[in-house]
Length: 65
Image (cartoon, rainbow, N blue to C red; front, side, top):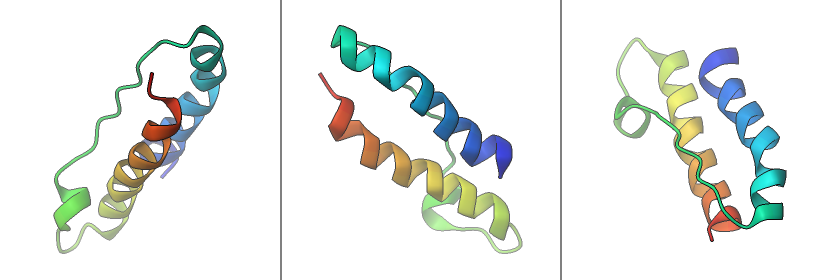
């Protein structure tokens, strides 16, 4: 949870103000297909990867230039 989801959140939170000030930049988040389709026995992993996908979709429109 700390690495897969919180790490992505913290990075986005750290770089977004500078990107908005300079009106340019790019954030590239990596996830897994398992975040979209699930995988039995990997509930925690699937939840974090689905979180990364959702967070990326939510942040993208607010920070696109």
